[in-house]
Length: 240
Ligand SMILES: C[S@@+](CC[C@H](N)C(=O)[O-])C[C@H]1O[C@@H](n2cnc3c(N)ncnc32)[C@H](O)[C@@H]1O
Image (cartoon, rainbow, N blue to C red):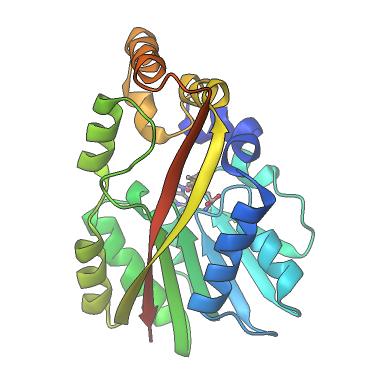
């Protein structure tokens, strides 16, 4: 079964770490793009539209479109002011449409090099002159309290920041980047439940027994009942 079909019902429970966490990254998206009142904004790989909903609360008169290829994820988003489009992001980027801003968070690792090239070319064409793009992506080496093999496989599958920046430049963007980080505190019990429910797509690559062995090593390696770690993102901005 598709990863996000299984995860959709629990996505917000696992990924909305706290209101402050959402506020922190919403603020970063608004400032980095930047999003201004009255603009048209697209989120790609928007999932349950957690951040699009928050942006709408803070910036007035936006025309907000959320694109995701999982109907189950989009269904969880209830905000009526958001236009939800169930479509592959690369197909969306080939359409005849125009907007001021486009952003994506924890999405770009789902596309391979060739798909990213097509995506970036299409987004550059669709953006109005002076428009901009923001990619929030995790570094290849995570400091999550995960087990070693999961961290290693994530690192193997995650594109590097420099590869993404080079591809954006090749598509025509003027590129810059920043680093954003937010401290996460949660109980080890909650975290191991998230791992058991394969909250990250990399966890789909483990059998049930391997996953249990991994959870065992998390518990042995981190006996504290509260876990604390820093969630970091590169914020890569491309200007047209
Ligand atoms: C980790 S979630 C991130 C959701 C949201 N951006 C957030 O930060 O809460 C990744 C999302 O990308 C979507 N996705 C994966 N591949 C896609 C594609 N080719 N086109 C559109 N959406 C895609 C998944 O369905 C999922 O909702």
